[in-house]
Structures are given as C-alpha cells and as structure tokens.
Length: 155
Image (cartoon, helix red, strand yellow):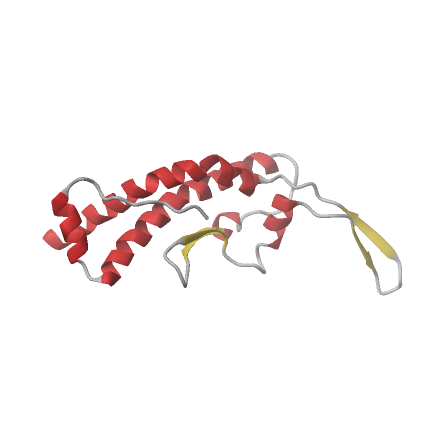
C-alpha cells in the first residue's frame, strides 16, 4: 500500500480550521476525501467489466454495480476498494482471476468437467490504470470536503 503525504492547500485559515476540529470530524473529512478519490478506481473497474462481458455471456450481472464498493478500513485510516460481499461476489472474482479446470462427480458417480475460465483482469487493470490518478486526487478531495464542512457550519 502506498503512503501518500497529504498537505492541505496553502490557505493558513483553512489549515487552522482543520486543526481546530475535533478528531472525529478530522477523520470524517479525511475519510470522505479518500472515498471520493478511490471511486475513480471503482468506476474504471465497472467500465472494464462492461467491456469484457459484451456479447460473451447471457448471465445476469445486474448485481454488479452494488458488489463493487469503496468502504472504510476498520483498524486504520484508509479505504478498501473491491467486492463488498465474499459470498455474492464469487463470480466476479472468477471472472477477474479465472479458474483452473474444475471436475466434480454427480450422485451417480459420473465425472463432469466444467472447463476453465480465462481471467479478464478487469479489476486488476483498473487498479493499475487509475492508482496514480487516485493518489494525486486525494489532496484535492480532502480540501473539497474541508471547504464543504466549513460552508456547512457557516450557515
């Protein structure tokens, strides 16, 4: 995981307001900015997936948009971009990473081979394409969230 140095803009007044906030609000501002910048990767993964599935399968992918989310880490200050649910997201993991040849036996003892699935790497490619852009965008998103919070309390 890359470390990103965050500097609020040169506006000393905004920096002073940020330092005056209680730690909970500071965390809220930072996490909001991280979530906003991580959505770039999430959106690219959705676009890549739409391009890979075009005309290849009649499988219903209507739950895809809800599966890939940006959520906060529990222990640390950061966000996780990826599948929200392990049980429901198995087919998207299989599409991304692919599978090896899978065999199984029926109740009658007949052996079936389901074949293998070639990985499309739609999510891996999205991370590689947009990682730098997301890291560069963090500072702007945090600043925007801070300005929004200041405007909210100035009303």
